[in-house]
Length: 144
Image 1 (cartoon, rainbow, N blue to C red):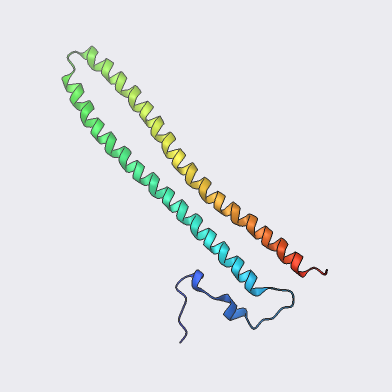
Image 2 (cartoon, rainbow, N blue to C red):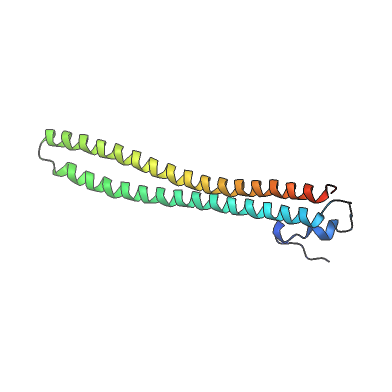
């Protein structure tokens, strides 16, 4: 029994279509091009996954920081001398928390945008290569 390929990259399409000889069609070239497409998609998925991991890691850090800060805030509120001091400190804390939340949201958005940009650039580069490959194939087959 023939060994099954472990992934699409291991699949040798030329073995299956090698007997199909179509004049003017470069089967090996098509297969090579499709292999490059799969490799580009695989790399783009890897970049996207790494971006998701980075966002998740940063979110965990943000939660940890928030928990630490909550403990400090509770301590500060207990230590405040007067109700006015507590009110002033609460107002300051709300402002700080809001500013921190905006900064964290901006940071997470930047991580996501960078990841998306890298993946899109990779796919865009491959798409341009595919168009060049098509143009070269047409030039090879046109009569001189």
